[in-house]
Image (cartoon, rainbow, N blue to C red; front, side):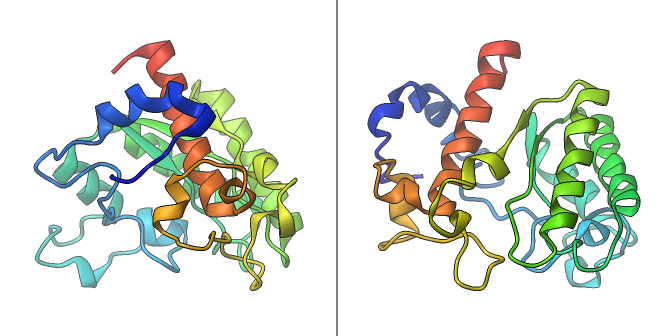
Length: 208
C-alpha cells in the first residue's frame, strides 16, 4: 500500500507499517482474498462449493477454509451480507455468520467484525443483520467496528448512486487512502479509515 496520507490520523502509522509487507501470499492490504468476491453472499463463503477456485483450492474445500489455509492470517476483517439482504432472513444470516466465525477461530484467526453499510433498498434487513453482527461479537468476545454508523452522516450515507456500493472520491482508488475532509465524505475512504482504526484497537488491546 503506497501513496497514503493519514492527515490527523497519524497514530495509525504503526498498524500500516506492520501489515504493509509481502508475506509470500501478497501484501495484506492489496491481496484480494479468495473468499471475497464481488456479488458473493455468506453462502458463497461457507456453504457452497466454488468450482472456479479449483486448481487453487482442494476439491470440496470451502472458500474461507481455502483462504485461511493458504495465507494463515492472524486476523480477518469480516464484512459480508449486503448481497444476502434481498433474499434471506436474519436467522439464516446468523447461521452463516456463526459458521464464518467458528471456521475462523478453528484456523486460529481472530475475526474482526464490521457492521454492514446502509442500503437504499432492504435497509430494514441490513439493520437486522447489524444487530446479529453486534450480538455475535458480544457472544464470542470479538472486536467489532461500526461502519454503518460511521457512514450515516456522509452525503447519501456514503453510498454511490446505485444505493448499494460505497461511494468513491475523485482520484480513487489512490484517493481513498488520503484521509482529508474532502475524501472522508465518501464511503470507501471512511471504510478504509474504520478498518485501520479497528486494527489499531486490536493491536493496542491484544497485540499481534
